[in-house]
Image 1 (cartoon, rainbow, N blue to C red):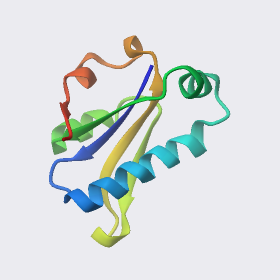
Image 2 (cartoon, rainbow, N blue to C red):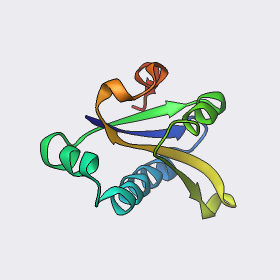
Image 3 (cartoon, rainbow, N blue to C red):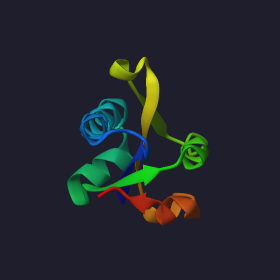
Image 4 (cartoon, rainbow, N blue to C red):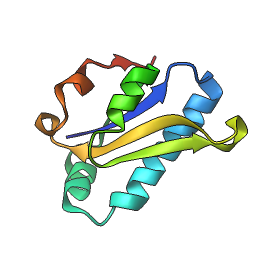
Length: 102
């Protein structure tokens, strides 16, 4: 099981770091009472942080159980999206092909 945190590729590193933290917390607050999330929390806790293009970001918005992160310092711009944890086989195939953020 994994949680995917996907940050737009044009976001500066400092904002990207905060956005990733916000994404993880937002996901926890929304899904903490669900069994898939708690299974992930207790047995896996794997997270993947990716850098995505605008086109990939749009595709990710179509994946179920996502949360879009906005940034007030950028006038409410959408900067990241987090996909709630689930088994790897439940993510669309393109998700596993996203570029890792380094």
